[in-house]
Length: 399
Ligand SMILES: Cc1cc2nc3c(=O)[nH]c(=O)nc-3n(C[C@H](O)[C@H](O)[C@H](O)COP(=O)(O)OP(=O)(O)OC[C@H]3O[C@@H](n4cnc5c(N)ncnc54)[C@H](O)[C@@H]3O)c2cc1C
Image 1 (cartoon, rainbow, N blue to C red):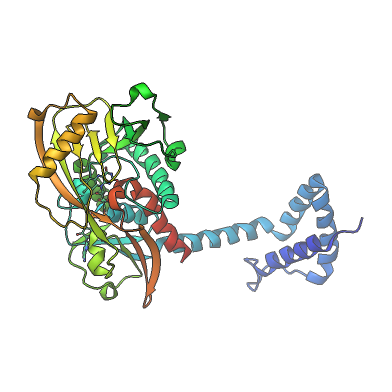
Image 2: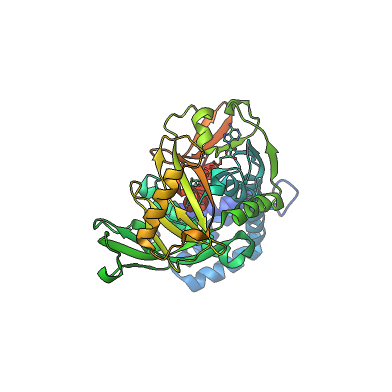
């Protein structure tokens, strides 16, 4: 049988490569005459390719003669060293200590990079602390990416809920009500429970809806847990205002400045979408939602209270609580939860969602520094956090 050319060439290359990379080469190692030995070995080896049992025998004999196992071991060792160096070496600064910044910092630290988190404000003074917080892609684009980041985050939040009790994550059922029949969300196959509601399960005023199971993230537990995890992994925390990305000395800067990116990157696409919420000491059993920006209604049952919302007021910078908004929220929630008892209200809050036409998750180079932007998550910063953090790490590895 005439052996085809390609494997012949490859086997020769393989043998020459092993010989050239021998740990003994040039160090007084075993003498070896390539011309005299290669022909018969190559023929024997080629036969082995087409007859597997003979192949194993050939490899065994060659291993003993040429110490191929030794060469392979050395090669593998060098390869692993290179990989470890690649994974260990980057000196990273993360700007922002919100959910996006800390999740990114944790993933970078877990991947072996060194991390400094620089932020102007910390928990509990961030919009991340105001988040209600339900896993649900809302007010964030582009859908094909947010569905993927959302699905990855769902899995991670569920795992944290099971394995890290201090993170404050529980799984709850909720029902989304809609005023028109719409296409089912793309993320429905990536969550633990999703079904379309029967007409008898939909309150008056709505005509369509679905039930889903989703993580509820109690941010007053989750934010301290994220910060502690960052510290435990060796991350350094620094309070400071960053005026200019070019002024930071680091190999990599991960920009998670949320609404601060408007000034820091002169990105006028970043706009606030104001959200006001109410805390009530009463449990609705299952969450009830109408999450269209114009009619936004939600009852998010945490273990300590239920969060009622909401408002989505675009380009509104006010952090003052408004009586009119409180009344609107209560009326909207009573429509989906008639048993709501106003005497059980225990507090309220307001925050500005860092909205953008699209989440900005991309890299650029300024001088020799790699910048990864990760901001503009709108009403879904928690929902997308781990998926985006994983992509931050991938972008660094690809660079
Ligand atoms: C009422 C309400 C309800 C919400 N509910 C949900 C929900 O149920 N689910 C969900 O997924 N999301 C929800 N969100 C949205 C969520 O809160 C945000 O998407 C998320 O918190 C954004 O996180 P971030 O880390 O990007 O920004 P932030 O939390 O704002 O953090 C930004 C960080 O950057 C720092 N920074 C900014 N500029 C600079 C600078 N120049 N120098 C140094 N540091 C700087 C800040 O100090 C801060 O540390 C809700 C929001 C609101 C208002």
